[in-house]
Length: 288
Image (spheres, one colour):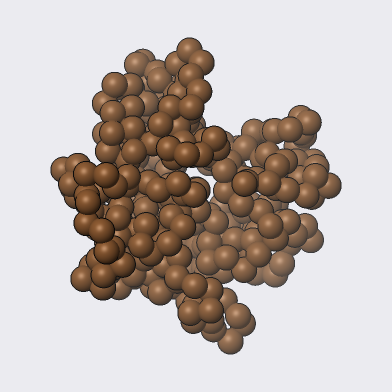
């Protein structure tokens, strides 16, 4: 695929992820007690959560006790990924999450990063990861970071932690941000065209059932796949799961052009839908 005539601001980052949840008490317990986030704002049925010493929202919970459970093959969230500042923080997350009694869904070394996988009480997939230094990334002939899935060396990871005072560790350390989102889509080419040509993201990797896109040479800000949703249903209104994810564009002129391409804009934020009805918010500020 050729490059879009619109190029995303290379300093783009990901912002908060909003989740519609049916059982508020179990969800808030998971995110505050198990992950160690804190509520920084509440307004009616909406709670915004951030790491302990941060004022920037990481996850927003929208309580809706009437929300329906989406069908298994519908488009939506595969997982959202919390990027930690360092490998040592990932080691502490492994210990803290294990100490909380949570069961991991898996672990992986992706060549460019190392990751832990788990699921929240509502079934939303979560990746907690740390990037390897960019200088250590393996690039192909076109300068694209090579990615893969290999076993995570847990023993090596734990060598990063000198103080094993597990009770004092938080799973999500200060400085954590949303690193990427991975989406379930119904048709890979259709969604790739949207995120590549309409949003102007660089296509980093493309296969028959998955694609990874980013700005500024990152391995991926957005992943898409049809592993569970090929030819399935688009987003079902009124269902639990992903409410929206956020793209932060620091260059106002780039953000205005992007919003114009997508069909309109407000001064500070606009919410649009991809071909499967997945909502994405475009915000014009730089993530601290």
